[in-house]
Image 1 (cartoon, rainbow, N blue to C red):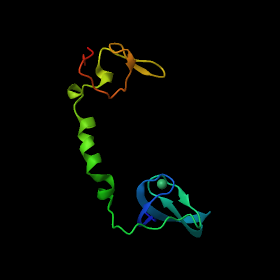
Image 2 (cartoon, rainbow, N blue to C red):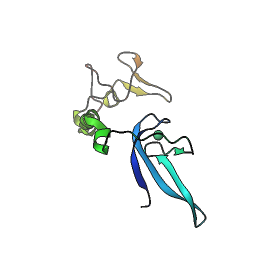
Image 3 (cartoon, protein in one colour):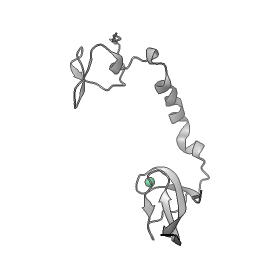
Image 4 (spheres, helix red, strand yellow):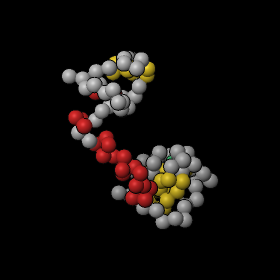
Length: 120
Ligand SMILES: [Zn+2]
């Protein structure tokens, strides 16, 4: 790939710690320059917009952080182990909202609840 990783930045557009990437810009088949963009949101930085590179030597590993890694298994667990509202008998999905019939309130599909009753 012709894409180059120029270094870590804090993107002023998506506010994420990401990388400043560059790739050649073509006009037809003629190379007319390079474009620099954010690896997270893909925003192209124009002349003068280019954020300064972060001094910290950050790896992708660091950017993901331990917190995100720990939260993963929760969602990768077996369906049977999950007590999410969406697997519950009392969960009803409406076009614009999701409700718990037992507690008569709006819920999230991935909420869990002490009164969980698995749907058959
Ligand atoms: Zn960005």
